[in-house]
Amino acid sequence: MKSIQELSQIIFPTRCFGCNSIGISICSQCRSEWHPHYYQTHVGGINVHSAVLYSPTSSKIILSAKENGIKGADALIISAIIHVLNQGNFSWHNIRLVPVPSSTNNRRRRGRDFIQSICKEVSQQTQIPLSSILTIVKKVEDQSGLTAKDRVSNMNGAFGVKSHSHPVGDLLLIDDVVTTGATVTEAVRALRAGGFHVIGSVTACVTQPLR
Ligand SMILES: [Zn+2]
Image 1 (cartoon, rainbow, N blue to C red):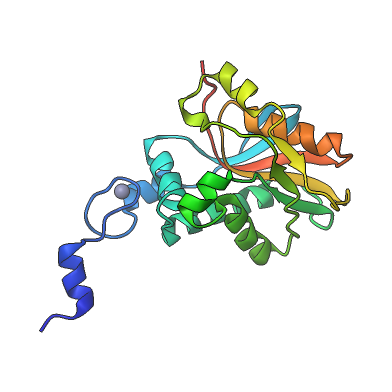
Image 2: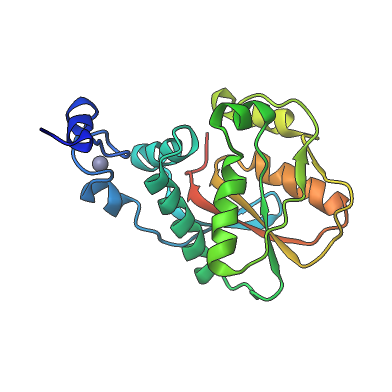
């Protein structure tokens, strides 16, 4: 008799979370596309440090982590962020990781605050303290369907700093992907308005500039 695991492999075969081909959880082709590099862009008045260019494969890897909670995809994002933290010229003793918060709807649907849980892992592996001080104070639409201009007005005034947070250290904003920079810009605005010192942002992915 076949084991439960073997049976479930027949009914639900493992597919690559990058390209959906049947086999292992990530195929070598997709794994090589995710190979972390080091990109620096300047967005919202700060430097954004990223590891991987946004592509159909990297976007599927991010979605697999974000929407489906696939552990292997989480691990790729975590290691990409740690790679960038190692590449960037940061004074590690003073930095704090600030996750970009998820909306209540996304948190409910996914069963977790995605970036928060990625940051927790990064913090555990690097010993860099986590500083979850940002919160959403305005209803925001999903950015993916919006133009660059609409993203700015959508995000404008969206973030605030949690009460009882005190400015400590050099803050690094953490997000999965930087696209137009509307989110980064708003997060930097909210943190600086609260007197916090933001030195940059680290993201797993960076897109080519939107037109
Ligand atoms: Zn693949």
